[in-house]
Image (tube, rainbow, N blue to C red; front, top):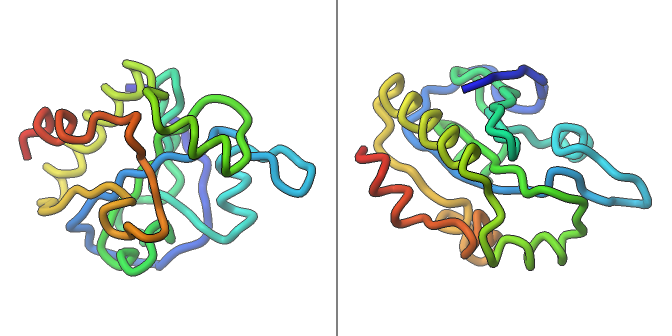
Length: 157
């Protein structure tokens, strides 16, 4: 599992994680006529996440586990957030279409499993949720293109 570090400043100074929230977002998002990388976009809108996972399986750490991140409204005081990066340039509408079918790579899937198992062991995690589970009327990720049930079964938490 290869790691990189691209810090994001938005978030609480401290937290004690007990939950993991799995998200996905476009690797690059076209907004206001400019293309943004995922980290640039999160920074621009004042959000953050603990980790992003590239299609090649590299984990980009953006916040330390003990720091809060602003990634899941109402759940930012005790959760670790991870984003699976959907390849390609997307508007929000094309992103919603992309996550209806398989969009992740085997390397992303394995890195996500390793990261979640590591977090669970390090922090006594008691919940793992999809973003859409905790905000069902607002969010759709990680979408139907991600095999949630089998993923959770494989984690064996």
